[in-house]
Image (cartoon, rainbow, N blue to C red; front, side, top):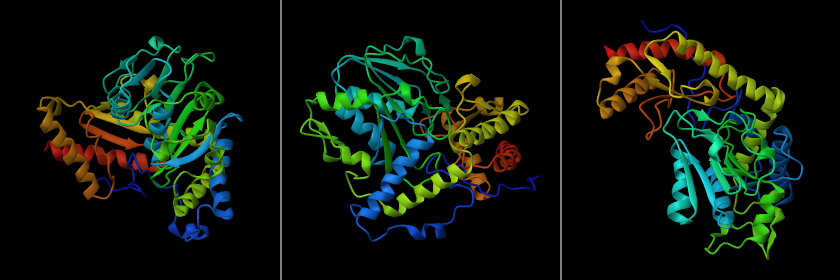
Amino acid sequence: MKPESRPNRPQFSSGPCAKPPGWSADQLGRALTGRSHRAGPSKKRLKAVIDRSKSILSIPADYRLGIVPASDTGAIEMALWSMLGPRPVDVMAWESFGEGWVSDIQKQLKLDDVTLHAADYGEIPDLAKVNFDNDVVFTWNGTTSGVCVPDGNWIPDTREGLVFCDATSAVFAMDVAFSKLDVVTWSWQKVLGGEAAHGMLALSPRAVERLETFTPDRPLPKIFRMTKGGKLIEGIFNGETINTPSMLCVEDALLSLDWVEANGGKEGMRDRSTANLQAIANWVEQTAWVDFLASDAGVRSSTSICLQIVDPWFTAMEKADRAATAKKLSALLDTEGVAYDINSYKAAPPGLRIWGGATVETTDIEALLPWLDWAFAEVKG
């Protein structure tokens, strides 16, 4: 039988993600729409996003933080294209976004001295094998695999190379060790529940030095350029964006930061996300037909929670049939209005992916779980 209770909010998409609880478009009335982003009041709003993010996340005082184009993808791309080249590169990939950075480094930048540390979906490479004499590129949390690094302890404080970290589905939900990283990128659309298209880029002093001393032997598009005359363009990190931002999205980001501050800051966000993962873990432990894609609980994501269907009826199918069945299951939940967009990523093993970031209420996760059992029984017949 269908469960009687329903999630109050069925938004479990892994990006753009659920808005903060209590959010309403009516709250955006202060947005400086129709104003130039270069106007004084607009720059103050942009700088407020930078300053408040830096404070909430305890980013080191000597790091620069800026708002850049094209979401997290734009942020990490402009860093890779602007800074990679002087040293060999160790790059890590255990899901689709990491694989994307491997492709950029090897096929687009065409760097020769590249060491790949790869693992299948649900696994993580051997972190002890990473060479920090080289530049290192990795994702803190694999959004499409549900696998994250356990912490920053595997990264040495003293290192020769720069560490580039795509942290978009980890920042504001996990203890990201900024002091261990030289380039950190994320977007508003993940744990903040903000709108898409705007990226955040944090640079250590060592990263700034690389920018000011290394000139790539490749052309850089305007939106990738962070220096002029061999010096960092400081305006980027003071609210003077490279291209035109949406002031409506800026106001929305400020609302999200208001909510974060009112709900315990980064520690409160981490605890909310951890509680969401725990609710699912309790259910998985009692449920025979499903398991986590990440078998090692020490590297299991609390935001992009990826599940695999392990029932013999399902695993006996051909891969295409498994994908179609998982899609049918998630579509059924969508039709019922209890869970939107929880099918696994297209390149990942067929299954389910439930966003457990801080803007999702644990009570909604708990209300969803009986529906997963119901939907599986329906598709199994």
